[in-house]
Image (cartoon, rainbow, N blue to C red; front, side, top):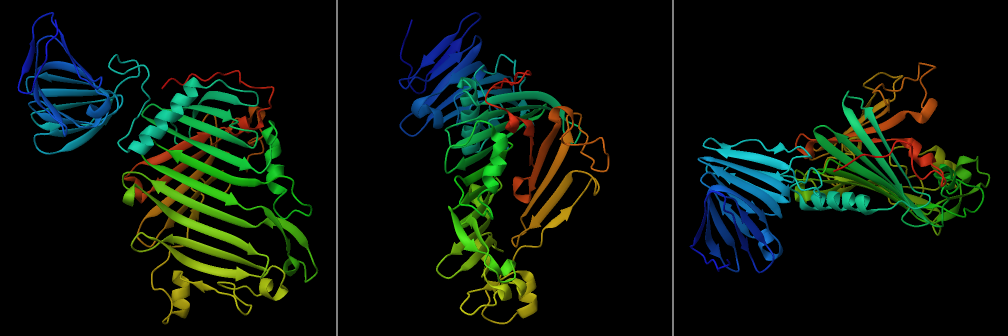
Length: 496
């Protein structure tokens, strides 16, 4: 039968008996046999319960999904998710998340965050480290997406992306690819890609890298002024046609976004471009007129996000290049985070592309014409010029560039240190399916080898990522997929 349960009451179940609590907002708590579950408080601010013995499975929805606390003899669980199990056996508490996020505190005040498909044990000595469940574990729901994270925006983005993939039916001009490869660090990776066409003027490459202990993913999105062909091998020519072109471009790249995440931290690079303008580059042609088409502006912005990033997300770097047809000047502005972590103008300079004098005599900030507004706040400029009138904050350290695997290997590393001490490092590899880095000194080693078997691996590190890194792999051959080849022979088997 059914009866109302009020605050202060307990539900006890015996051998072979179970009970179910239902709430007005649709939330449900399933109580297993041999359990003692108490309703401590239910009001407009919070609902709190106690599990003294046994096991429950809770599925919270509506208002209760964000204001519930469940106490056990050794832990307090604060609900920020939907479906989870809690079990009590003596002084041991076992918490398993099927879907959502749960904050768990032990009796010593230590806290852990348990996300989807993770389980944690809390005993007399406190919290143990959360562990991932196997994907076929009955405690993980079939619809759950792996590696849900504490940062809600990253968690929700990952979930939406995987749900969209599961529900999507590929259209003409789209493709998917899946293969098992080895990365540059010797780890096995299930690499999956989807080439998507949201509309006639854009494309998106979505890349997923599943390793045994982690999941990294990202996307490359390019948007154009006019419709582009299904054969994306023609895209480089379209992009090039708007850069120093003799003829008026009929189409051009408007924006390009690269995004990569380990589902906790993320790095985003966004480039936006203005419509091509006809510019006289006589300064580069000995003074003789040379009219070429070039973007009227180019903006580049790099954004980091994650639990260790101040404010959760911040722009680390921004560069603006602008053409002024009235003055005949290019203006460059570069902003980076300063010594207190705020994006501030590092330097600005102007250039007259039609002036041989300006082009040939550019040194330092590049200001040689009257009326130009130029300054440089970089460390070298401060050391060279010093004096009053210059904003006195240190700029960023010159990027460190290296070739860790040798000069002949396709392995490029670059790290930048900013004035607040934060660092961003990116290492890129061209790596074969068997994990070997492309060697340009070997005549038989070519990115154009049979089957296009080289993949681009991008490893991103930052001092703001709390020891984590982002490591994605991209198979470039999907960009050469023609409209008639919607699917590759090796169908994806990614099953989050």
